[in-house]
Structure formats: C-alpha cells, structure tokens
Length: 231
Image (cartoon, rainbow, N blue to C red; front, side):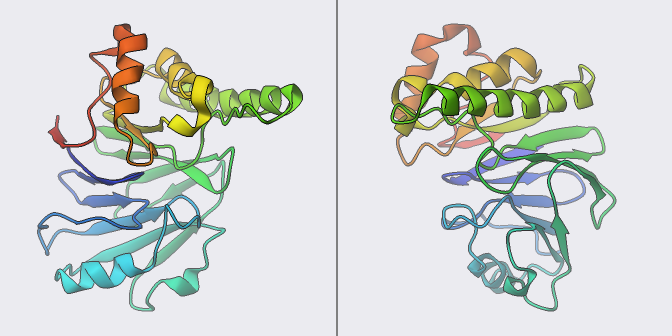
C-alpha cells in the first residue's frame, strides 16, 4: 500500500485495486493513474473534511472511474449525478462498489470513522472520532467523552480480532493542550498496526515531535505525515 499525505485529515491511499481519497477539502493531489478507480470518502460535512470541488478536480485530472462514499450528514446532491454515491451511517457494514468491505464507527463529534478491508490490506480513518477532552468543559462532559471514544475503539479492536492494521489515520490535535495525546495513546495501546499517521494537527506538525519525545516507546509506529510513505 502507498500512502500520501495531502493536507490536514486528507490522505490518498493506493492499493492494487484502487485509490482511496479521505476527507479532502484542499491540497495538491499527485499524478494518478487515470484508468484506476478512485473512491472519495468523506467522514462528515465539516468544512475542514469535505468540499464537493474534489469531484471536479478529479475529473479535470482525467480520472475515469470515480465513486463517492459519504457520511449521511452530507447531502448526496453535492455529488455530480454521473458519479455513483454510497451514503453510510454509523455502526454498520457495507460492501463498497468494487467489492471491498467497509465498517463504520460513530464519531464523538460528527459523522463516522471508516474501517476498510481491501484484499490483504486493512486500514482505518478516524474522521473526527477522538477523545475530545477540553479544559473549558466540565469533568462530567470529559468523562462521558472519554467513555464514548473508548467504546468505539474497543469495537474496532474487537472487529480486528488481533489483526494488525496496514495503516491508520488518527487525530492528534494541539488545540487540546495537555490532553492532546489521550485519544492517540488509547488507540496505540488497544489497536495493532505499525503505520499510524497523525492528522488533524492544523498545520502544526511539531505536535508529532512532541508526542514522540513524550512517548518514545511509539517511535516505530508513528509515521511522519509531511511526506509520502510506502509500506
């Protein structure tokens, strides 16, 4: 699998069968094989995760086979009528247009997270599923948030049955200040996989360096997203 970081929470992954473009809202796309199918997945409608312009960009690049997979909070009317569109809800299983398996998880903010199996490749994109602890919130709110997040990650872990993820795209948000690492740490402790890509860090990649300095035991699992990586 080849993984390319685009911007914020947007990644392009390439398997033998197709491309997957997650949560595009801006950024430069690399040169693509125009004959290879591409699935555009959007976890929710927040403007830093989805812009319909992605479809016109792909058409301008000459992509011949484009498919859309949208969380149900996004209107399917934002997709051109000539592009097949699958609308998904949280906590359900789907067969994608090319036969891949998709399982969705409930976000702790809005929309869904994605778990996809494409042949031997298994990969996860969190969307906005994270342990959103904020200093300005009440203790009860933050406890409930942590419980909700851990429930979804535990469901993910159970689904995997100990199988390692080929790649995982997980929130690491510096705006959470002292709690910035809580969601990432729980994920790393409960889900196997050696290619974990931090995202949603608002153009502050130094938060990844901070995480690795504070948690050096994960040096071999955390990927530096400001580059193209291949596994």
